[in-house]
Length: 425
Image (cartoon, rainbow, N blue to C red; front, side, top):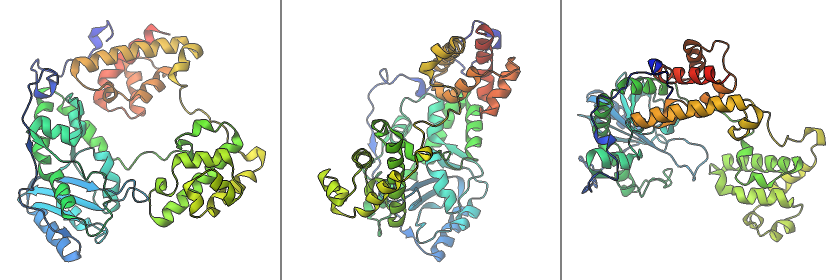
């Protein structure tokens, strides 16, 4: 932190060491109890309108928060749609909903109303839940809460072990949830994912209160209500693994056309693009630029034994693109340069960044919170590379807020960033 401690926010801790704050190496070994069966047994899957209305009525008649989870078929199907939705509420039990058979779950959404949702890693599930008509008005994210209290491991299994002394089996986490009918062991796994979620919420909330971080969490959870999914990337094909091997613009055009052809086929087949053609095979095709099926077979690519036509056509399209229309080797920069270039391009900005990072890291360590939760690295770099005209704490706070920093983050980070700017200008 800065030597100017007058601007430093008061500690949110009260000096008490909480369960989350105990170093994992110092904690005694615990005997965990396996969580093997849902308390009410494995429920039947709701797959028709009549049962959906029954589920809605039961959930409306329950009490307390609603535990919510969703299972997707990542790696098996195209996109990130939900193939099973799990809900549990005190007094209403656990419900497993099939959003394929019942694509409109708005009756359940109306039944939940303003009741708080409890999710773990909410950003993973909120977009696919919105697609089937489920929209939280209030939520508690147990993973994000666990981060804020300083839990060293924040996966659902680790958090349940830490707070509740229970172990969750995770062997079905990556299965094909689009399969029908779903096997009973998978349904048991799905039901157990919401079995103790509310109890976990209460335990995390107790640590947030004890550490004085409840307001931090409230602001973070409120911000999640507006989350609709990750930002749409420009030229998503540029994220193809192994792209660094392609060093010419014509080669990039081949990658792009192959990527688009793969995406079209994956969408048509409703399968993961990687199952149509791996990134490694796509890059190999781009480097080989095959023109005949024999060329494909010579490269020993799996696709050669199937349907070579879309890949050969993609290569031909890329080769027909005029030189002036080829994709650039790199996209124009829209933000600060890579951090490794700061010292050469602007040593003063590099000094600002080094000082601010050091002080934020010290605050994060003292308060047992990941430094990236204090302020996103991207926000810090943007404000320090091109500081606002008003470099007062208030002016810097306004700039941080414009990049999405929450008020609690601004309160902590603005004095640190303003000091770094003042002392390195």
